[in-house]
Length: 108
Image (cartoon, rainbow, N blue to C red; front, side):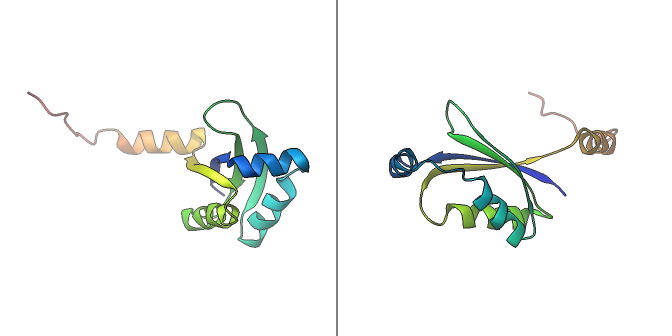
């Protein structure tokens, strides 16, 4: 199954709630992933532009989007970004397919 990187930032209210009641969010994400036909891989918190990153597997882009919508629906996320991840084998397949395509860059 394809993997997706789900980057997220919490709202100030979500951080306040988590600070008051620290809880591992992984089981909830895993349950929603399974219910929608995907699989939870991991959850990591980060420093920088995003507060965390989740990795999930989903059978298709529609399922991945549904997962992001379901997880964000309660309103505790300020910002999300979803990125489809490709294995080295998938990239090599794409590179081979692009070979000899003959597309030319614009010239001035």
